[in-house]
Length: 309
Image (cartoon, rainbow, N blue to C red; front, side, top):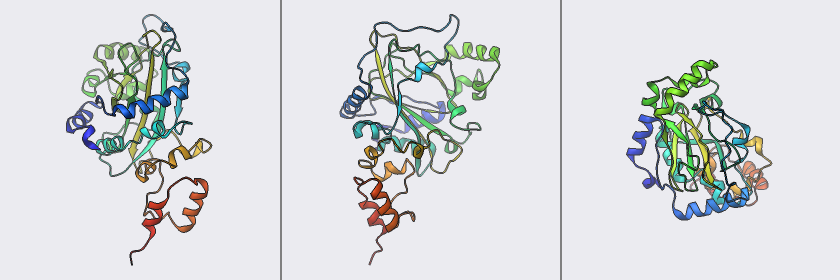
């Protein structure tokens, strides 16, 4: 599955902290996920005009309405949307980017935006402040990769994420400034980063992996009746307990069977499920897990317990 990205993408990721990979998903995969988006959110377009509430002179600001249409997996829809965040090619990219033999997903959520629902314009910020209690590491293995996946065509009028590469932002400040409480410093940094911003606009099926120390911001949807369907999936090296977001078991009332009944062992391992051959699996734990998820094919786990004659 690694034919969907190449060494040049990993090189750009390591150098810049983010890279656009166009047409990562096949048209068939995009169509299936888009159908789920339309069913889940019940809308295919926004209102006629953009909602602009940002005060003059500001780059943007956060507002709860920007995040109104976020749904973490599992979602009451087909496996297409529920499993696209752990697509084998995404897993492969995360392993390569983080120099990790195994990775875990710690956030995976569908995010729909519609023209007129909010002013989606945001200030430049880094994600480490709500992904770790400390700070971004200088070692990629100890950081994380967020992969923004577009399932609708995203032009400049459809709210693409804007970002600043690490080399460019280093001319202005380091990521620690993004959590500064100094309003004057904050305003200066926003002003200085603005001309360095680049766009992630790309056709449906494209992805944009970026790191938790990369400055980025949401932009407003201005296309009449516009919609933007995106999924954000975040990976960390397995065992890196300093980074997190969702506690998956906390959401145990969500339809997890939609994932367990269709996922591969590698995909389930991304959610922290012990892989086949792990000592966790015994006759008792197999029986208990099967009772919880009757539709889960546990054959690989049972076969890995068998001792060769």
